[in-house]
Length: 58
Image (cartoon, rainbow, N blue to C red; front, top):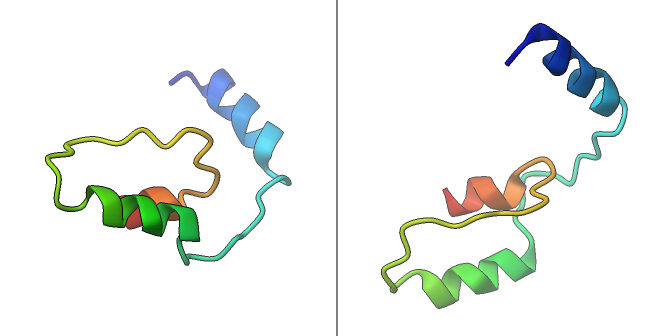
């Protein structure tokens, strides 16, 4: 990634981070319980924010 692009996004989001904690959402917990015994090899987390749900699913 070029420095210009990186700097653009770093500046854009520098003051917009909202810490929702590290506890996953109830929705992703329910989704996980539905898929944990199935042959799911990948999940796309759209709008992952800080990544708390992505990290849980990892």
